[in-house]
Image (cartoon, rainbow, N blue to C red; front, top):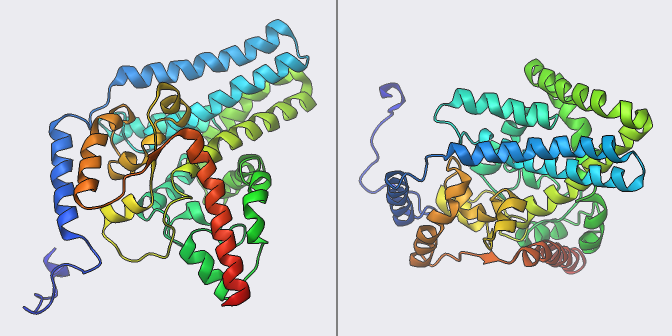
Length: 360
């Protein structure tokens, strides 16, 4: 490190940037130490084993539905729903392995991450890592968080960015109607229309051949198990239906914690403040925990990204106390209120854009 030492700061120079909350960072580091002493960073292997088993059992149940009851409309739809649950829940489980929060060594986390996201879902681990780590570093920061890349070409997001877009007289879409067309190009389309082709472009363009091999095992498996029952056209219809249902599930859950929150350019705030202003929670319940993969505890997840998800509720009271002490709003809301807030925030930012576009 000596080669990086250029010199000492002069006495009148601050040792801490004014945009950063020094006291908050210090107390968060103390909280982190407390959390580690409490053993909250250690995973319960039984929890994750049972979680994987429930996914595999549902996967088998989906195939048995068609094998036992035929391929008429009702069994086909039931199979589609079961496979959608498999895909959504496997998505939450790969998230655990991707964050290295299950095993004590990264080797096993990476291996199971490849298995779940590659073999069970047909997506590349490297693609997920590339996008998701950026998101965690700078959530809701424009041009740094890829999760908000739909601004400005599809949506105007956040109060600050929407007004800025309006003042610049930019109109890629009729943003004042975005709370309506969100239902058409958001939840239904993200996975079947965009992700489905982009993941193949990603692995081929970046030459991620190991990821591609894992993805191929997924498509070979579902092709061999479902084409004999449904034929090629029926199989393609099933794949589209599953991706359509999964996409709706995925988008509503992943956006409810971030889109209604503060979205802006990177203001060089401290890491803790950056995480807190960009995240909110959804109330705990057995269903909410399962349905969202425990991402209803988004605040705790962003502050402790390697913490096993079954411990989020244990650290939540400590995080609430830290927020209360520093006058930071800790938001937690009912599930359907969180869904509604996505639409409300899009409507509000769309109107702010229109006002700035017409009058500023």
